[in-house]
Amino acid sequence: MVVIDRVEELERGERIKGSKLITADEFYLTGHFPGEPIVPGVLTLEGMVQSAMILLAESHSRGRLHCSLDRVDRVKFKRAIVPGDRVEFLVRVTAKEEGFWKFKSQAQVGGETAAEADVILKVALQEVGFEL
Amino acid sequence: MMESHEIQSILPHRYPFLLVDRVLEIEPGKKGVAIKNLTGGEWFFHGHHFYPPVLLLESLAQVGGIVLGSKAKEENPEGRVRGLFAGVSNFQFHRCAVLGEQITLKVEVTQSLTSLYRFAAEALAGGEKIASGQILLSFGRSPSAEPNPP
Image 1 (cartoon, helix red, strand yellow):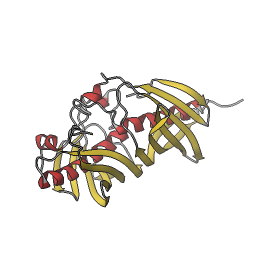
Image 2 (cartoon, one colour):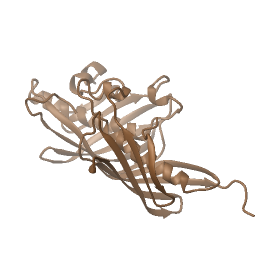
Image 3 (cartoon, each protein chain N blue to C red):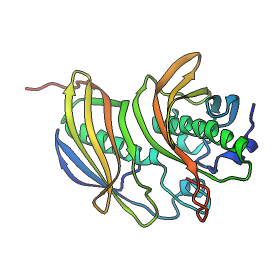
């Protein structure tokens, strides 16, 4: 399930800006909630995680990359995101450690922070090929 | 024990975002144990065979909502309450649950500040802990003119 429409900006190894438009006929809104569509906070979190994964993947030029969500911390859902909104996912790398990348991320609507999270991805890079 | 129809009388969530199947144990306002079954054909298995980590967070938060909602229902069966997923702290994923597994969801209130409730949350599958951390829900009386959710 992809929850990002576009990558707007990307600086390899540093930061990414992704975006998603919210429309009323997204399938999950029928149950969340009937008659009162609100994007589930966890899908906003998923947007921040996927942005971080794209940034990670785009920061490696070769090799086979495998990454998974290891941990989330300081996650705050501050305001509801609803149909008609345009969400921007702003994610930057805060630490690169052996086997882990850490990110600070925000989801903004109209410049206002709707959600924020610290995201930690577990990274395994399997080298393929060789450098000459 | 609480079956799906009763869960639906407490939570406003519906398909495709009702992510708790059955409540096994509950102490209203304190703690609860519930299950989520993973079987083929669910929308999130499209192209995958594992339960997305963020949906595991949602399942645990919904059990938290049932724990708080069942207490509110005891106190005032006609009252309307409003629950919101407010946050997550220090939540560690050890592995993903996969198709064919039954996830056990455990939550317990560890702190409450006016309308904000902090839970210790844990998910188990195949007899092992697959994820744990803290979740925060804000929960209180619904303003009269507003509908029930989120």
